[in-house]
Image (cartoon, rainbow, N blue to C red; front, side, top):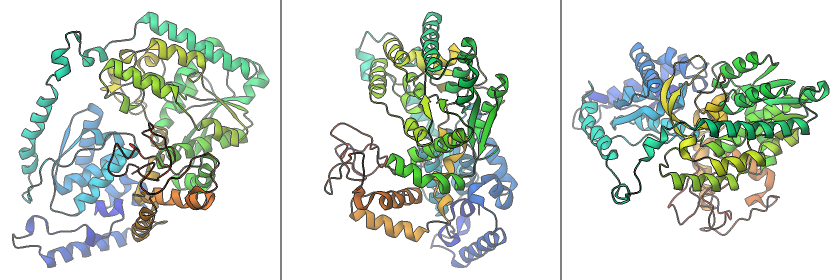
Length: 553
């Protein structure tokens, strides 16, 4: 029932006989009874939007034992304790937990593939939550043995495999064995703390960049300038560090703005605490996910000329905050753009353990970085500024910081007021430089912090796009060279092509569509010979030479 409520998939596509099925095949009467019960439950709760509120679904159609499992998984996520998920019912609990907190997907190990069809639906939703939140997808179930026994037998069978996998990861690589110069492993260096002298040097450069922005926008404390200058305050490490540096320099803001979709959005607690600490007027823009889509999606697609879901979800939030800033009379907005790129804030940067390779990739990313912030701000008559993208700061960071200055294991909290738990994290030098309410907050992408992640999930679109529409249109688009896997991407593509014509004939960005079988693997647009990411559709890896298949889930 939970999987049906959260996925929108019809009951007959989820139900099987379970442990009561005999070896000869399915028990049709039993399955029919299950389907009937499920359909009656869904009809009874027909007025409830379960897909937007997993807690509501848990209360309405989940049992106490599943609620306990969900709570246990979320606590394990907080404590970084692996969870061995065994079977259909526990996978349903895992789905609820992942929808409540995408970080939970990172502790989930799936023991067995259930014979129940509904598990595959739940697993795909869990993977999508992880992908859309910027996390690695959980692995396939370790075992596929047709087990129907229950009682944790699958977990017991899979546990030795998990232990063996852990042992394998502790083995030295060939390079570590042969390279005598590698006297210290990357994991050891990851726990180093940036030197105090380097941290002080960073603060000096960073504060100079912030002072330059203050001068460009009318001065640090001129009343007229202050009334036109605001900060876009997510409550993350980056923007809270700006607030701390501004206080040292006497730089004032006329207000702070934050976008959230609910009271449970992680950004709300941190940003509220930061604004209160600095005595700053805090403008909280409250919009539902539906309102973000209805009001901003068409105009953001038109402005950015893309249909990449992840970029658009983040950009919807940015557009909403700039629109409100303009309504309040602000002309200049300070943001935290660039900190994640400079100091290893993104989780995909943590897996590269070789310091030299890490720095090479970081430096290359910073040399090519682009942000949609300026375009979105300009649409509403606002000029965006960031002390991190300022040449003075970025040049210093690239020249002077290495992996161990940026990445390591530290006590991190997921929510304001939450417990600290040891986790690998980035931006160490920035966290050490300024003591703020968010110094040891987890890195949340804009969509996660604001609560907009739900837009990336098919259940959100169930009232706008049917499963049949997705299947038919995706097949038709595939013949034209476009890979569309989700309802979100289908809606985005529809708007994009309606705005820019067939195959983007009216695009002004200069992107060119190539013949079928050439260019980006998911859209056939020319991305050059070296780029691995397609800005238009979001495919990664996008080079046909690097992948056989698509990438834009």
